[in-house]
Length: 134
Image 1 (cartoon, helix red, strand yellow):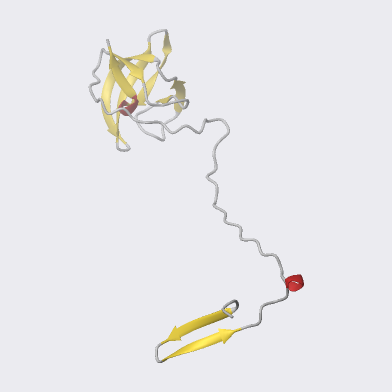
Image 2 (image 1 turned 90 degrees about the vertical axis):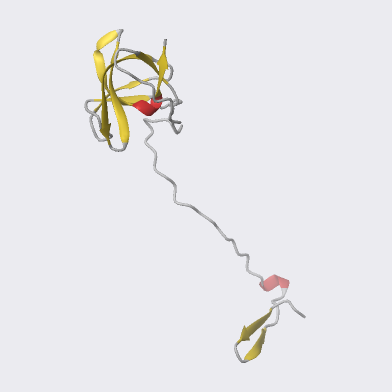
């Protein structure tokens, strides 16, 4: 009978271990639980992952549309850099005026943009999420 039999091969010999199977009324149910550590998410931000735009044809004086951010939007920051204060978030599809830049920081190219409908709303954004518009 192979149930409950283990064969172990070790250099120099073969070992055979057996045990009698338990009767059905002595069986103990066993559960295997596989878990993963969840990634904490802030409830204030959606779970969509942005997809960068590789166009790279941005220039001062042009208008650019926010693209590839999904529901997350594009952070408008006080300075070029991922740790700079977030002043606002531009929504997907929004059009902004490119007023300055570029600057390199934190492995990104940053442009200074301004909302033409609200001149107080301006700051630095990552180029990857801008697409030139006409």
